[in-house]
Image (cartoon, rainbow, N blue to C red):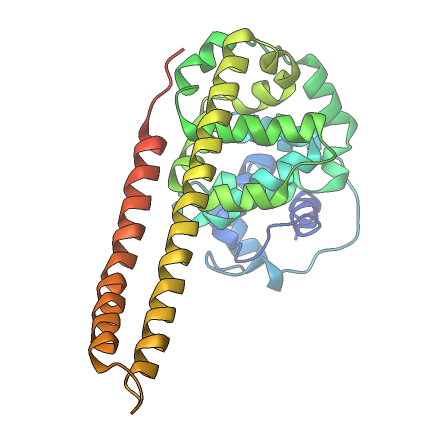
Length: 301
């Protein structure tokens, strides 16, 4: 293995998100930096395209290739946005990487999969080359570019998480994990990254959160969440009350079937209890319909 290839392997393996990473996912990066075609790389190193990188050993030597790595990843808007984000906010970028990794079956670009371990490598993140690149790029931010997204719940959820990270003690990792499961949240975040809009938003989040129409939307969204919480609490109490009544009716009805009991009253109690068993799914259906109506309601600004 030549020195440059060795350094690429070392950089990748010393980062995170290498699980299930194959030679085929990183070979384009190696080809770009070394100037060799993929077949030559495979032949010289006796690699197979579907070989796991875990099986590849490297020498603990250091040569400077971070500049070339930056040149490779900055070509693609997606990886360029992730690279800027990883330098500006390592903790947040790691959470974003987790979301991408959890949904890697949706990713069909090898450069994205090879970017995650590189951008999580401390030596790369703290390198002078990445610092120089960040300081020399021009980041144009316009709040109006994001106005079309403000109507989407996934974007508001993202703003709330970023706000909690800015003004709270930390980013709520659990919130991110819960949101990453949602299709709309994942696709929305990916859309921002593809358009190189996520890093800009994070860098300018304090300014963005102080814009009047953003504050208005966040406030109205919080009211919508409170309405949902109240409805959930109401239907939950209703369901619990119904279940208690069912239990009491069946218990009392059973006692009425004893020799000294009132047989007719017991029958009526059983009929009432059985009827209320049908009410239970009705409460659940009503709750879901009501909450769905609130969820779909658009708040125009």
